[in-house]
Length: 111
Image 1: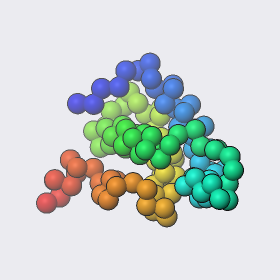
Image 2: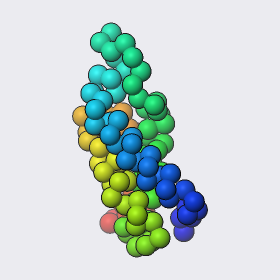
Image 3: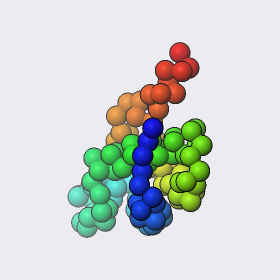
Image 4: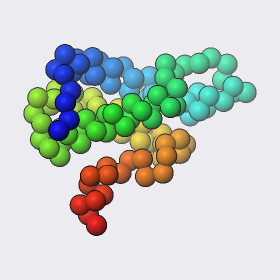
């Protein structure tokens, strides 16, 4: 069972909304850190941190949606929006490991 203390819910919600907006205004060159084209560091997280964040948020969403944990419903819309934006970036730029977006528990049940 996934445990997330309720005190973190507001922080996750605010972070998801603000980081989503940061990603929306960041182009792919800024995102991948092409220093020949972009001089400033506009992202607050490294790609490795974004991968770790995505893994965490993906797990949270899996618990909310698949296991129907109602306590975290308030973060569902903002978290889904952020994860979709990261997924879209990964679809274009391929910075996450292969099969990163597959939930292991669901992959085992489909075999």
